[in-house]
Length: 448
Image (cartoon, rainbow, N blue to C red; front, side, top):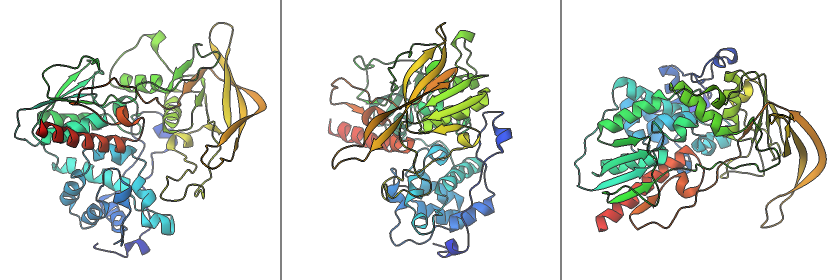
């Protein structure tokens, strides 16, 4: 490393976010950027670890110390080449990855101030696009064709890797544009969709074909391909089957998130189809990232009040001795959406949705729960306390995760990738899975 002791004198500096009163008026990205000189200083904090755990923790095996050093030296092109060798879409992960690498950074363990790996990653790819380092490449074709069913991160990654190996690639996607949940689930205030369009233009220029607005039947795959990659994600949201579920005003989280993104892309919906929080009291059920995205979207749509509840206990702030490294730390996460205004509560289960007498939601009965310590080999046990109350609301958004899809038995030339294979997970894991699947397809086709 060029400056192995910089971490002793250079404090961690994050780029920060746009002011709350400003950012809630639009759907533009909330995260700001540092200047080039400040970014070099942050990169210099990556010390010469004896055993660097950052790339071990990264599902893609990114070579963080190497490209941090390149940024520190001002060699952005080298940094881009090192980064793109392992990550097909650093402009995605640089914005929405929870940064497993930072949790494993030695500086995190020593002084609670890891290197700003995610932000540095984003700065590298943005510099690469602005300087023209990202250019379409041409590859000699090998005469074989592969169909990728599903244009989310896993399918896109598989397509990029297989295209580079010489296969003719066609991506089929049921939506109007590729991107999967990155396009239709992640709000624009976290990842602007021009970022996806920019990458799709590169992929098209490299010879990858896109067929959108087409839903493929698993039992009737398109003819004429030597192999297939199924990467359709986890389309079935986890439901809450309690009395009143059918009331107007109870929606899956993605009904709103997807529709809002489609509205921003220019699509139109009839008034009765709109899922809008404008002027409403909203209850978000589910404490994860999807729930947080709902909170931020509700603010921008004009909700009068937003409450988020979670059935699990409130995690501790800062450190949690129950989840030591290398486990992912179960600690309180306060997002930019929460900072914009949100009532957050824990240890609550929902008993039933309340009808106003006209088929419209007017509230939810919730009940406090207690969690008993887990016995050896068992999971913690939940007990109802009998302490019930009514939360008034005009809209409920269910952010309870997704069900792992079931697949029929496929021929040997059909491969699964991403969430479709493993169940709902992180974008970085989907990209890694797509890469692994591409290698499996290549191995198979070379034998057959």
